[in-house]
Length: 380
Image (cartoon, rainbow, N blue to C red; front, side, top):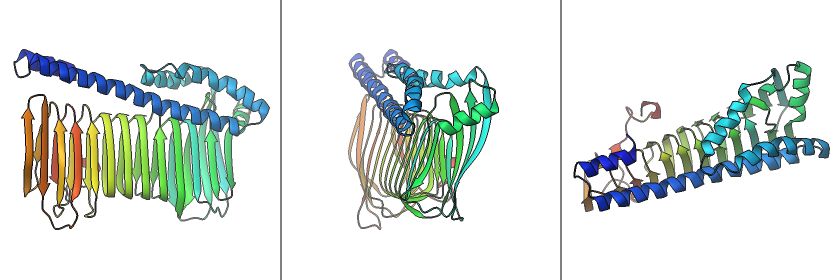
């Protein structure tokens, strides 16, 4: 149900005063403004990076030609403040018409020794996997528009795709607007210093990667990560679900503007946000330090090991709280119709307590015990 209609219905039923309703509507309006600004920030950031990487990878002639092609699209994207997602969809729909030719290509580097991976893709999904071989392999399935000639399409693809391995750094970039490239990357099993992935329009997935720093951002596309081992993990999308499973990181920051957010694994510090979607967090480790969760229109489900000591604060405007673990001690509870707040504490077997801060404007917040029956996020 529309959240504003829900508030008005509560006023009609007498469960909410006009003053309380006004405060809630103002809070939702403020959250909507923040959401639009977040969309703007994410898409503009990736758009600028796409533009910069495109310029860096071409000769002066190709650069000028590319700049004309890209800036036309970029100019259209810069005024999307109030219609960001529609602009992305329009950008994607540009591929639906006109001529096209398909191109398959493989980039390879034998006995690759790399510690830094930098990926920029304008359009198309990207999948990165580790494998037992020493070679680096990038499989590209491209569709080049505005031509039906396969040789011309191949030439266009190669001129507008950057692949290089220098000084331990892999750079892969495809930035031409009229080209959609689905990419599968196989990297040797190793501990990488940094993996950086930016996609303007497309999904991202990875499996079995090990990196000290891992950043994945998409302006329009879901993100699915499995079996990661990192020290710092940052994941962000303006439009799409985020799923991170069976992973381990000292610090995780994940944010989606429009979509659900599901996380499970071992983490010390978590900062999770979704403006329009549910957030599910399932911890399997006993040395977690803190969890911060925010959502505007979704619910929050936090699963923790039964042995954990914890303390925290929960807030909601229209939802409710449910603490399903035994031994929860409620220190303070505020139950006004338009503002609910609860502070709690729980003793456990762990020496340091887990700190939980959860805020769901219109949704409910649940804290539950994690076990083998609910640890898999796909069951959430």
